Length: 333
Image 1 (cartoon, one colour):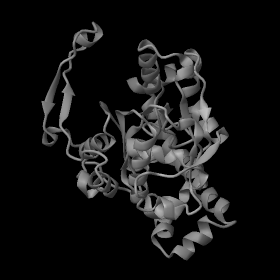
Image 2 (image 1 turned 90 degrees about the horizontal axis):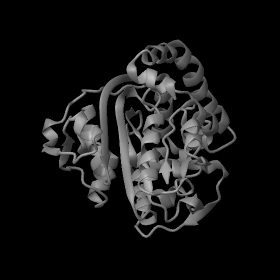
Image 3 (image 1 turned 45 degrees about the vertical axis):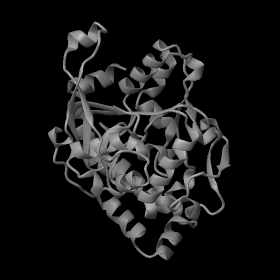
Image 4 (image 1 turned 30 degrees about the vertical axis):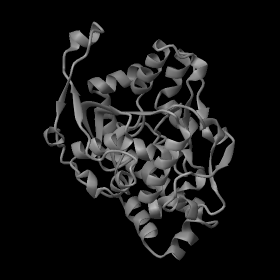
């Protein structure tokens, strides 16, 4: 199972799983002997994204069609109640009627392909938060307790999936008010691990943040769900060696010797409003996000991001990106 990462219906650099990221995973699985029918790409909608249009805009569908693989939309899948073995921090309280997950995911080995980017609520986002999309559409109820929810979901995915691996694409990194309205930077990095805490901690360190200061990483580490201070192995840059498919050498480096992008936190008008709701009285949140007013709340977010921010700021940044080598590669798909 490949849990794709869609952060915006529109294409924007660094927001969502890249087509080359998806193709690289698919080709490797096929070369390793898996059949197309055994490879299951999935993604869900959110209150602010259209998964069907997003899969098209980010060019996933062309890649999957090329290899005879069917895209599975979690909006169409059956959800079943799951009782976690781990003691939950908050998720069972957020959803007192039960935690529901897609039936299709149970027992499958899991691959996460997130991108290297920031997030307005969690500072950074990556492999761990990508699993948030497995919850049903009411997952926006979780934002007040998002760090604890992510640790709960990490425990759950370790119960459900016999194998987990994540590949974070950092050829373009997103700074600021992610996961949508970001500044993009070409960084030419690829990070991978079977330990999501380790991977997201290294990602945070590279972006310029101390992992232990990011609550969901610290909680996950304290619960024994991964290593917040991992050893790092760097692939030596020997293109001929890699091309010839010979033994690839890695060198061990300290986390202190990682690059530091010195990324800065930022908010948009929309995210400031969301933080006021999630950080304010629970009664206000309930009225705005758990009543008939919900569509209006998220319509406001979409109007800001999809129409104002994208047209007046984002569109120019996309045009600039498409002139780069990575942008031209994206257009070639």
